[in-house]
Image: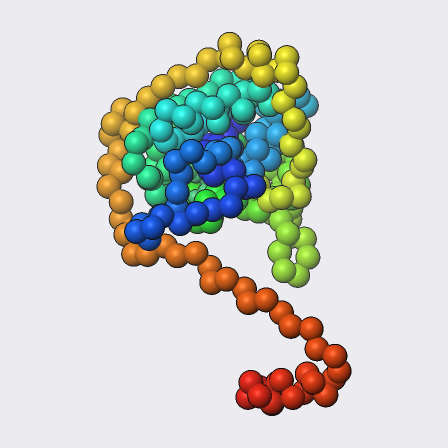
Length: 248
Ligand code: AMP
């Protein structure tokens, strides 16, 4: 069984985000980019399935500018077998990503697509769900455990009230939560090996997909700065301050 893992190139989670002066988005020039952390978890899970003899091949796919090749190389160094880069110069929305993935699913016929639950740049949390709807496949979102047996996958999900387990018929869509696994570090030999693994290249036009945005970002702003606190000597001082502020 083939497993498809979409991996997005995002601003590294350690970078302090700077908003562009014109409020049109965030600064990406000369900013460190990395694989989306939830997608790293997805690659790890897919590679574990292959190591356990459940998956036969892990295909990583990234949609975006040419630099996404680096993101794919990270996935390949972690153990994915081959990569697919779909070039898109403009920012693309989850629905477009889902449409592209649907077309790739038709070509590759995987039994499982494991996505991150969300990309940490836009926090959309939409692509997996949209893909499941477009394909009419069952979905297990926010997975903290998966178990595949007899053509079915059981997905444990962390929900408010505890753990919920859903049992899905393959082919299916899974999106990863933080606790699913701890992704491995790619070893130097594996990074070297990954350079030789194949990465095929396509464009959005190859799939006949119109990527015209449906959403318009009106404004992007930095969160307001937190005001510094004040240390007070006594409870009476605190009550005085609260009165002054009109809180009590
Ligand atoms: P989102 O719905 O944008 O929060 O993204 C959820 C997941 O969809 C990500 O964790 C990725 O697995 C996948 N995804 C989103 N955008 C892309 C992209 N441009 N290329 C590859 N995978 C993507």
